[in-house]
Image (cartoon, rainbow, N blue to C red):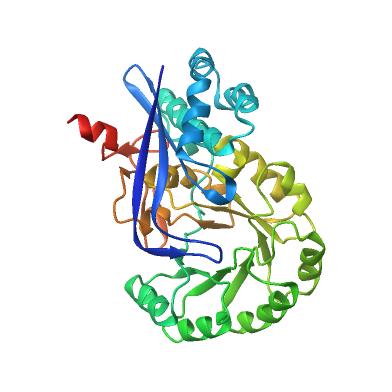
Length: 346
């Protein structure tokens, strides 16, 4: 088995702003595991908030290449158990590797990944489409540019309620709000009342990740359900979030991939919490992996590839929020662009 690492620069259709950062390009690392004539693909994006860079992911994976190769006969769950201690300080690298291994393993079985897991896809949720922070006029323009039944609106400004009031004039779609740790307790409680009247479904991570006292107050007093994101990173965080949040948004990059995410989602459901998976502006490589978890989810945010102007792969397709699977086995991914290094050799 070969380990092949491909860095990419994913160009965004629009500047993407949240409460703490803005970007026009998203750096991403695609991992390929090639075994004879079959390949599996995984992906993790660089992220300064979590300290993930292309360089440290590449170094972490290269350092354990021999361990990866010598364990190629294991099922994905046992492979994760062997590999995860070596990548415990780089969950983004672990994620990219785990996605690639799950993809390859299911392809070897001649099955789509959700089929290997035994999941029923008849009641899959639809995905939202994200509107990043901008001027009100530009946010309205983005909404009109992409008619959608369900929007995720990034907030964390001094005009948050005004923004939603204006957007509401242009669509009857359901809104979800993600403040990315940008609000105080009082703002969250007050905003929840106004936003509920404006057709908002839930609020995602309004407070700073470590503000557990504030989160408890919000949990008890908010007019809308609260979903954890930055407060829920690894498996142990699910139980920690119970009775502080109404649900959890599991990010594959933060928890170490599909294998850990499945366990987190099952644990959340056992605790009576809502389940969600979100994306990190990945290409169709990462987005297609998320699709196989849909049967475990109440909500999903997997619009990352839709926000790009240069998707580097094909996999699942999304139309009006509805996700359709590729005809290929595994996660259904095929790369459509060479990496910059490969391009230079052509």
